[in-house]
Image 1: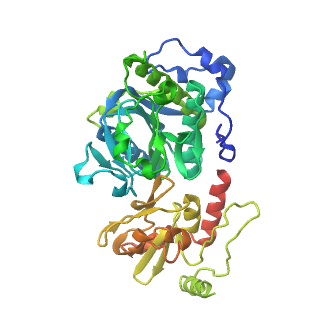
Image 2: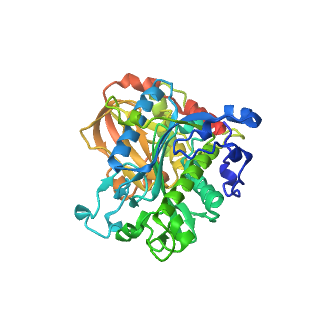
Image 3: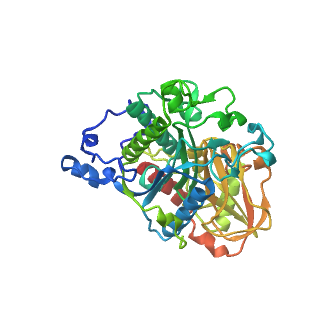
Length: 294
Length: 162
């Protein structure tokens, strides 16, 4: 299948806002299904897109363990189908997390500035790739569960594609020029990493994903060497836009400003995700994930 | 070359043609090596069956597509593996991938060198980069795996489609 994201030219300039965006409903409900409306001028384009179930909890702060367990159960169900030469739809989970540190398969304790047995926050050893990172409120986390057989069976391509989603979001929604750094997966503005990426793949089904710092409190990152990279820092959209990540009564920036940044980032993330992966989101009730039948 | 001679004698023992050489069509992007005499799964693992023990690893095609392997997750000796089910994982570029067993059986040995030197999978995927040795519980499973020629074609088709 053709994808709008071509690996060989992955440094293409960010796309300008297309005419599709002007036809979105004015409702700003978080679960607005504007990505699934068909448009008279681009009906052909829409029918080419595969559907992707979206469990959108972007305003909710969800325990890491819960979201992790949802992913694993979705993947296990899907693996059974894939083994039987069938498949279900792709899924995308969008959340914020309560403060946690998570480790990847190769994570080294040397990248923790504390004793692993004495972590200041809950610590999870996961099956994703990559080094230690922090998740917390103000950070949007995306867990795409995609079958790469319907995209490109190339893990490098998939990582570059996830980076592309964020690079486009930062430019189109915030006018921030972000870039990749060869050899250092993630999305950078200057020498600050704004988005971390780490994935697991099983029978070409992906899980785990990416985390974008919108208005995250960055101080927990000081207790770790994020992603094992010593000489670069971590940043957030808020910090880059207003020059400070700390709440300040004199800055004129109120707390609801954080909420607005999250809203804008969320909307743009879903839009760019659909564009890069050529998917059409079908919003699902979150209660499906929480059902005891799962 | 010694490797080719070994491959030929094993192929003869298994009554397979040893005259096939890896087929590289000009349109193919698959320049990885494929060894005669081994069997291959469509998830890019290989099996070398010698007597009562089968050695398993990932193919040159797989390691080439993964890039530098930075970590290998292996099971314990004494555990069991099931055909087409994950037994371990390899990490590269912040992506950790399952490795599936082509056959079922009991794990009799695990390559401990891979914890110190995971890069052996890249430099020597069929030799020093072996992952586990298994006592097959159902040797007939080997028959449903691909031979060298079939696997080479499989790689070419997979690469061409993407």
